[in-house]
Image (cartoon, rainbow, N blue to C red; front, top):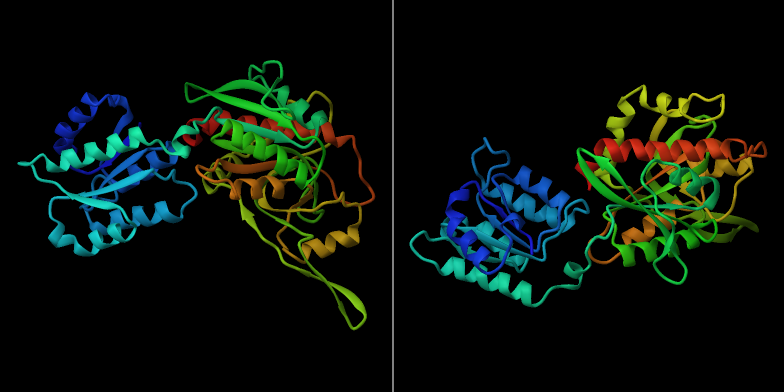
Length: 405
């Protein structure tokens, strides 16, 4: 049981905290935030069973409290995919009469508001009853604990997964998690703390195989973050060999309607774009700002490769077939002029996460350009590009993992 109290007057909760500890709640699992900004950080980093939210809180610790900050946090919990949604929210205030609008908004969302009174213990008893109920009736989501901090999926065993397993992340021999899925377990360090990781490859290339594999891993292992690494085709005017693309959004470029118009077959695209985690995107921006990091990663490859790779953030298009036709690439560019890459799997991963019930993992993908989706495909770059995407992931996880997981 984890509880988050958001109130700039933390001292008034000493009686409540003592009573909760007496009920068996570990004191280290009771956190206090004195501002809505700090509460957002905590809600990004951890899942709380109960949120106790004062109706008057400051945005930053040095600010004056205002009811709008509580309302904004409540609204964000309803719509944001970045915040872990508590199982229960209780509003608290010393004066309901002066905050009728905010009280009504809480109650509209079916969350209860209790009245704090220093001279009365009724409010403590109400919160105790809520905690007892949560203990006695754990939700399905509460029971699904994260077994890994990071899960990695690759389309190909070799060279994509091979390069992931070449990372110095203490990999162990593979083990089964169901009849069809084997994973490799490992660990890495970030910010002085150890984090768990698992890796697997799909049974074959494509969106369907990726969706099936990612669904198994998410349902059985509940990773905090899930990522796909590997190779892709690049858009020639926007990318170069070895560039690593962070897929900030992805869509199925073959989704739509094929119809006849004046005797000619016409395809009407109906794209459904899915976004990567905005939190991880912001960390990738920081990594991109370090002009030397990609060059250093590239120089660590075992063979001489004529490439000067970059880290790029942008759209990637997913389809069901390998593309080796420059003319067809132009039809994909017409769907999104900023598209950087073309591949066969990422939409399956992002779509699976989007449709996961409960606490969704954060999702993103890193793919390195090994060809330009034309007849001049060259498999020589596959190992190098698999190495690049895996090692950019390593740099991200070790540099920012303590902020992400």
